[in-house]
Image (cartoon, rainbow, N blue to C red; front, side, top):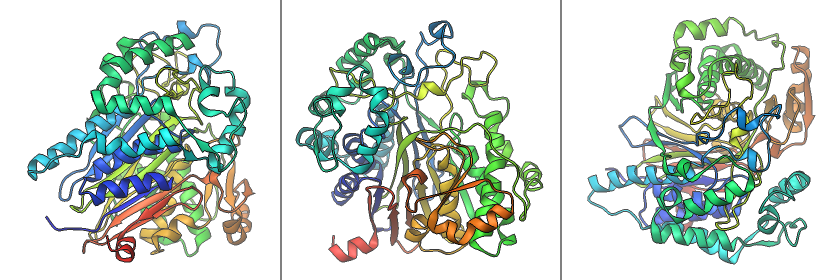
Length: 536
């Protein structure tokens, strides 16, 4: 197999360093991603963690990508009766912690794919000791508190300060950490060490599972040990759409992957109408509206789907949606928006194997419930369920809630392969579409496609309004015209974290790589330029 340059990108530089180190040791893209996933759970604990979910898109050259759904299902006790007296599922506290955490099972399943690669190549997988070492050392010795951690802590302080286990883990003597402080997570370090010693299955079948189940029950969660023991991540066939520029892939239900594919499939039919950056933004925004209408109507747990979601990508359906889009007029909005926090990371190893991965707690710090015996903060993804028994998102045991999470991957006609994604809840499909369109359709350099001013329709993490938000640098050239076309917009600061933390890795046919990370994050990227400059 041809040797390629390596690449890695993550929204925190420590995770990128970890991924790079594993790739330099000859590790696979999957091994690098598992190691980085553990590291970023330590250094970005407000955004993701072992108590959350994960979704994988894994690509080996010449083969169909593999998807892994490592999202959690609702506990067996999570019934409508359990929440009697509530108008909606609480967003914080024990009752918000109602779905299983799938991330660690996803690491395990992804490493099984890596083992298959290595067996075929007559090579060995790296040990868990090697993969989790950076995360363990950072949890023990500490990592520098970032501005995004401080901002998340300020915003959530009132709602989380009294939640079980939160203050001892994520506050400094009951007060907020300041930027530059050293954050240590010693109990989490011990848990990671136990996973190295006992294996990742201990999270679901062993001592860690028993301790987590006990701590969650004490906090008022419906999750019990049986929910751990019955959980498995699963491999899934990705959704795919063929466009004029190549084949695009994303995850099926319960994710909004279909929305991400719809936006770009529609734009592929309309982009030649545009003559300017304003036209591009307007068309993508209008494509987003059509995609979100379809998403909200159909996406739910796989067992509840009223139709095959891939049929929305049929030519007839796309043409119908295109007829609802006009270059000179915005369709009225708003609609009910989704939000959430997460991290996205991308990798490419020397064999050309690529990963697009996303890991999340949902809101900042998830439910806020921290298991005192393991140091693991639990997700609140179950708050996406509805207590209306007639809703397609109605809460029911063993079903999965709607997920904003969706890692993206593309195989372009010219031979390029592209792993890309972002955090940002409702903004994920939109930011994916913006960076992909700028890079692929409009030939913008990858780093500029990510860094230049963006927009967001609807609500993203930490926000409650449903209008169109535009960063000031892009508003300077586009706002006046967009208002004329009927968009209800507000201008926000440039380089705004509200717009998500995007990134991308591209492998070219000649083996060189491009990678970029978002200046809105604390991330970094390595690619062929890094390799040349550092002679690794």
